[in-house]
View 1 (cartoon, one colour):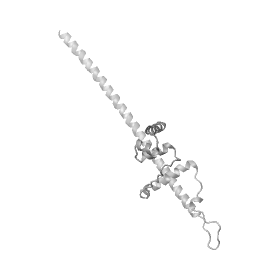
View 2 (tube, rainbow, N blue to C red; view 1 turned 45 degrees about the horizontal axis):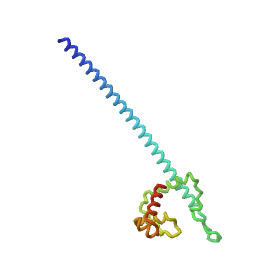
View 3 (cartoon, rainbow, N blue to C red; view 1 turned 90 degrees about the vertical axis):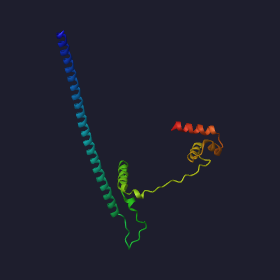
View 4 (tube, rainbow, N blue to C red; view 1 turned 180 degrees about the vertical axis):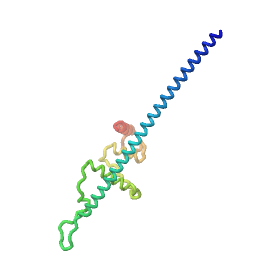
Length: 178
């Protein structure tokens, strides 16, 4: 009987030792994966910060070039002499600027927005004046106008002398078309 108990304890000890070894290897594997992911994250963060710095430097260079170009064109502005009368008035500085190529148009707009970033106070609250729809406008335009004004489908139908169902169908078809 003691041999049986002794054998069973050795067997249980071996199983528990094997389980401990398996758990230890899994834990080490998870720690290795975590360290690898941390290294990748650090590399990605470093790469992104370098990329952002590069873009910022390019933007600053571009803004510098645009401001230099503006000052050059302002210096080249045509000014008539006091003694001579010219038949043509002096052109504004904006017309004298060389044409910007289409791909550079986005850069110019970005530079303009970047410079006016601090000038948030100058932004106007322009609201376009909406015209009322006329009989010449198509039905959908008039329906949308009245709907934006807050009228119900039944009120819109009365104003346009149409059926309520016709208004609802037009709106549904428009929603499906968009």
